[in-house]
Amino acid sequence: MKLGIIEQGFTLIELMITVAIIGIISAIAIPSYQGYIADSYLNQAAIDVKVCAMDLERFYGNGFTYSGGSCAITVSPTSGTAQYNLSVVSLSATTYTIEAELVSGTCSDNCVRLNQAGTQTIY
Image 1: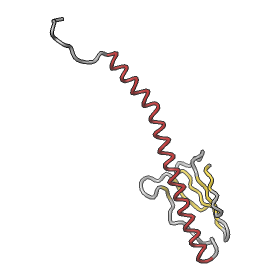
Image 2 (image 1 turned 90 degrees about the vertical axis):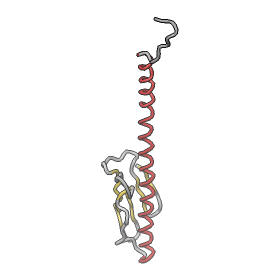
Image 3 (image 1 turned 120 degrees about the horizontal axis):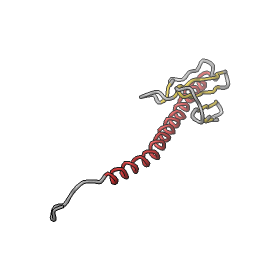
Image 4 (image 1 turned 90 degrees about the horizontal axis):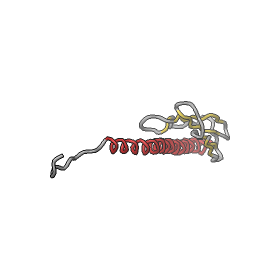
């Protein structure tokens, strides 16, 4: 080695340590991010279920019955890729139940149900 010449670059060990650190950060960050996205879709579905309930309450205000009422919203979110299907699962003259189910069809703490009394259930 000649004096006065400075070698530049990274050693293989330094690169492997960097890759390991990025891997560890990714292993923590990606699942957290996916959880935040799922929570935001669930919150949007809860909002859309309440909008649907307002449609039924408006119908009830005109004729004092929920029978024959419907929701303008059928999917949530209303723009972009649908994550939830909204439906009125029971409807009578004095009661209703609105449900938002995942498009994938499996509910484990990710679906919303709302009734005429304003009771919201996440199941």
